[in-house]
Length: 84
Image (cartoon, rainbow, N blue to C red; front, side, top):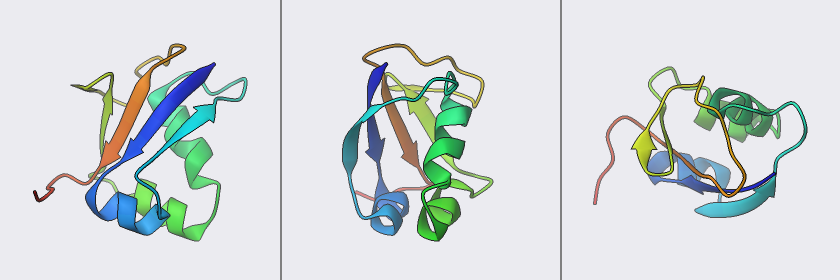
């Protein structure tokens, strides 16, 4: 499954990218599992995506960790308050 992941505000700064196309490995079926998969990339990823108030969206709709991923989805991660 191929998806697009977008990072905003302090999350973008911490991971050093605003977006990426990603082939999701088998077993990563939800937004929460994707967050965990990305957090395993290293300490800066873990800190950026492990914040308890992290906000997530799938296909431009706010979602929870249990939201299912589908091929072609767009997932976004951002802090609870972002600036312009």
